[in-house]
Image (cartoon, rainbow, N blue to C red; front, top):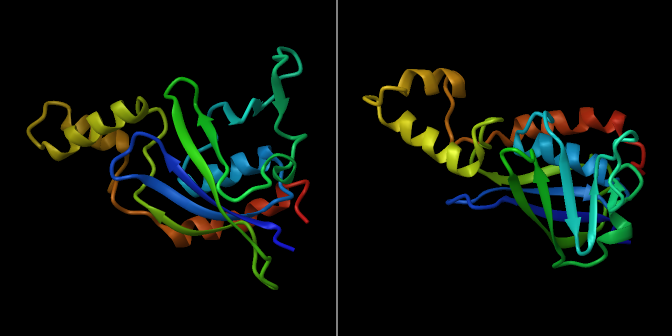
Length: 189
């Protein structure tokens, strides 16, 4: 049975594309997928999120202020809505900065015995830092970093963090963090 989804997650409007390819069990919830993507992309889980799958909006449901058309991400597993290779859906993180990702099911694969899932198998480029103003703000900050004569160069350099290198993606670090997250997941096997 092909119960592992190979997902390609691309941060929209980035050029070259910032992306990850992750293998996840189809039995995880969308809430779990949110955390898998946070770790894989390099986000910090500091903001709200939403998945848009066809006509379905899936996200965090606040019991005090719930939206009628928002499905609770803790209640829906991927295998209920994502049955087909080639299916594309949207993952939105941080409604202020509007980090929109396209998620594509590249393949359905069989679980490899002894392999730990989720696993990130490939990626390109480092994720923008949180709260950097969306894609436009991020590229503006990269421009300032490249221009040592810019009046805000030191400020942005310190804000981005020491040694921030946008071209570096640390696959080993991501995969070291992903298994530790497993203990928090409800619908794992």
